[in-house]
Length: 201
Length: 198
Image (cartoon, each protein chain N blue to C red):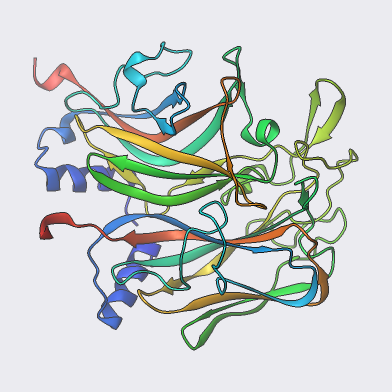
């Protein structure tokens, strides 16, 4: 079975990144929000406040830093910059259809994340929660994420990446436009490689 | 144990299909609008009039340089007026079959997994939700009472390039409503990559 580390080293070797193997292995996640409502996430991260909107200063990693994307998740950021559940804001019948682009290559293609609970929601099967709002109700709160099969996809150092998405109503097929109070955010989570000076300085 | 990656390479190799391409996670989905009450549903057969939010294919086969492993089957049913998630087909017993080419690769697999009303699947590792939960609040668009059906397959099923496939649901008069039902197939796949050839 190929491990995350195997995959990172394989890609690094293909790309000629000979020093990546000497760097610090870690766990990491990057996130950003489509504040422009343009349908692109991470593309404008350089203009976003850190950490309330994003945790990256630009949509590419530094020298000898990389992320093996093993999980892609979506959420909503409301007008108070509070993180909300996509299903709870948009409703069960919505779907995000997204592409992940690394460099000039589309590595995830027209992938749906269903508000009702995308494929790969086993981890919270059957869980319930009590939400206090206008009325106190109980509900199932689904995850809106994709676990990557076959280890994952590597974002190499110094290569730009972004996520393109559109929200649809899956029943009618109509496009649903996000608003300033329902902005879409995205997490990319996985095994991270951090720059390690020990061997070079 | 052969992984999805190894299985896809093995089958593509046997068929003489291209083994290069961008490795990725692929989720195919297809919607049937207003299915009503019926004993047989067939997904991935009709693509006419569907938008990109209702299917991500235009025909019932993958492109010539694309292939994938089916590892997870996902089923859901939405009402028309409210848009909330409903029990898929009501609570009646239903089975799912997947046909790839002229071969049935999943045959009459029951999708309820013994859950019924407020029950637990006999195998929680491979089945999730799909029937009534114990949440006693009425279901609305924004408060779900149930979860979609999701079945994790024990065997990696390969859809090779350019081979037609479909998913069939059989029941005794399943109630699928006037909204929409959706089937998604997820797993490891390969998509066309120009690479060094352009």
